[in-house]
Image (cartoon, rainbow, N blue to C red; front, side, top):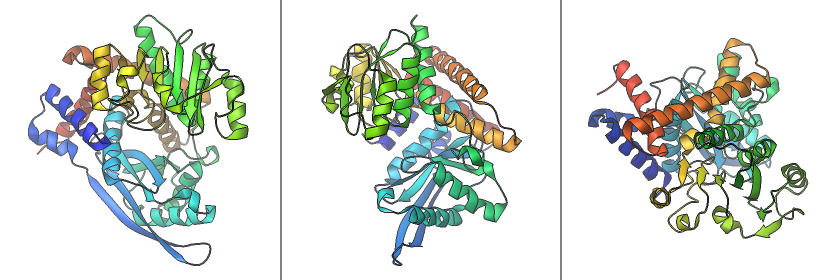
Length: 411
């Protein structure tokens, strides 16, 4: 089942639990606007190249739309629709005043020079500058984009609308980016895991963790778990997978990854098959890489008691059913990885106020939001007698539905 089908399925189950009428249900599913633009740029060798840029703006009942811009060769319209919709529910679960959006450009960033990427970003911004904005739609980095990309969008947008740092988040610190944004998704996943474990009378310390993915999210989660006394026994990335039953020294691993650009070859752990990372023995499994990695083929083999979804849509619905029969507790992505968008919201707030926070305030506020979010999800689980995924979906969908009705938008 692809990401869009799975997201629609979860939405429909939530709508049924909430007893939404079919017209309202339909209007919540349909995107507010889908934008597709042609971006033609001169390449460094003087030839012209054309790329397709797009933006799906899903819902703005609760506030400006929010979501990443990705640069990737296979930008699938269905996946982008699913991710835009997921952002609508995620921002509602986190209780921040946003709706959902997603977008990007179909290109291979590794095949383009820095100046070509800059020209492409600026042309894309020129095409959509009237359709994004501080109180309309606020982009952020995603796969293949970074703070520099956001700096170019900010600069190009400001040529038309005056200096507007709040038009994008995930910016460089020097242009109004927030302290703590870099670690936010990983730190949010830690706070989410902590809330879940506390509920079962446990803490991070002493628990054994396996982390799939050692990019921004996975590496920060590993570093912060290690700092709190958790034992990271296995990690993987695109170069391979490593394991140490006694716990990997994450500080040393960070140095190794910085030097070699991957976990492969780390001296203080043995190599394991990258495909077996998800079924390694542990207490908490954190998928922090790609979607659809936990499926009906491997779900029966999973030994973790808890799964914290730091990636988007890592668990297929079929695997969900198998795991729940096994008694595995899954903390769903729309809550567990919302740390990034929450700190993006803090960045936006700081830009609008023109008053920047110190890092401690950012981290303390994030903990407050993540802890409160977990309580809200649990409340919905009790009300509707459902698992955490449906608890989170009913919470998000209910908040958006209420805002829609209050604004007089229902059909």
